[in-house]
Length: 95
Image (cartoon, rainbow, N blue to C red; front, side, top):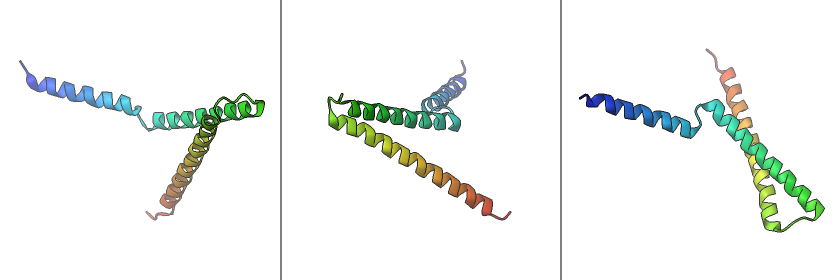
């Protein structure tokens, strides 16, 4: 009976499971991030329409939805700005 093979197999399972839990790779992570922000913005748009139509049951929940979308969009904008700054810094480096 070979026990070493079982340990290696269990490590491979845990690594692949953690990779799936994280979302796979960077591309999947970015796609999920953008989709989440888009969902927040769509929810805020629906909340604003409901407010304009007067179909508001809970004003606090409505305002929370709108603020969440605002914060998500600001966060995404800051991430984009930081990524552009990092790219520009790399481009200024002399090789």
